[in-house]
Image 1 (tube, helix red, strand yellow):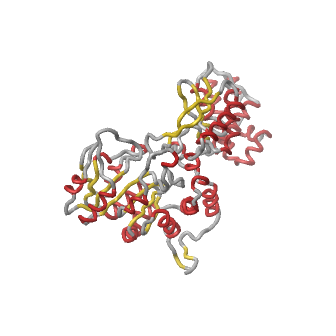
Image 2: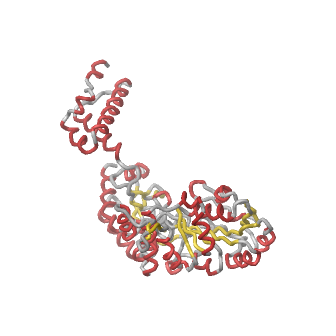
Image 3: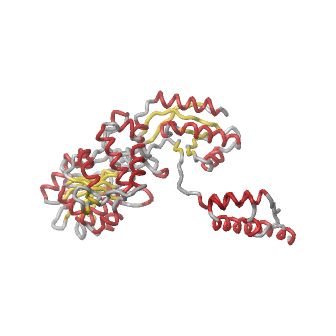
Length: 455
């Protein structure tokens, strides 16, 4: 054992080696030195356990691997071949080229984020988005914060704190990560008044619950689940007039942020902010990174006097968007203004992708990969708390296990230079071209070939 320990070179000796010179030049001496220490300690432990110590080139290679791995970003590009278009775990909506360019342009230099170039005086970051949000929604005014839960928290804190908000029991939903709407609302200091039952709530239930201490009635769209069967709910077209008649606010949390009608693409209707505002909802809330297809944001649209209150509230500063998100959301909204959504916004390009194009790409993947891969019918899901249960017909690349574990192959793909995430069904790996950008085809094919060659 002693000789094994003695065979390990010193930290200084390794750092002087020619092989580590390039790593030190690129990563810095401190990073490589820590990698040397960590690798030597790992080998000492291996020796204690009775293992063999392999020095020389293998040791130097292991040190380099540790050094580069220690500075590699944990957040990286992933090829989403799952067929889930808005995949929450994979970052929700991918961004358009114009959106990425706008974010990069503003991020790499100074900007007029809070400077009025015309007046030469301090300006407001909210002004950069409001005109476009008003244009696409038809609202009197609008603003954006860092996500939809934050939008709801801000509005309730500023307008309903210490007072009651009436909501249907069937709409006290849980969103991603275990966060629940009632918990978000409770943090605002508003008091929930639950009406109706899980499956049935009527307008009379809201009316009976409105009292002297009521600040608002709220509708929350069931954007991540669906209740079917013996159900009844109240539309914003009914709820907003009741609120106006009784002198309280009406708030509509739509969640997914659908600004165009999905029905022409084979999906069911989804509540749209424009319709809620036409119904005279006082405030409407929706996300920027779901069906809207932009960066993460929570958008509040509605009455001008209410938006002005929200902009001045202290919580708005804690929840505000940064300059790159503002630039990105601005660029995404311009796609709607220009009428180029299905061509430029990746989410809608995927939703509207012809089945013939999907089939051709899947067939090409199968031809180039081989290994028993073939094309099968399947479905793509919208996902991401949008259009629950809705699917689109698709064509899938299927790779049978053929004596190897589908889980092992999936893990190998996750560990690749560009990770690929598919889905497993009956011990077959499935890959959906709908959610893979055509520019990623070659990287996916190469990743699959590499993983299969090592299986």
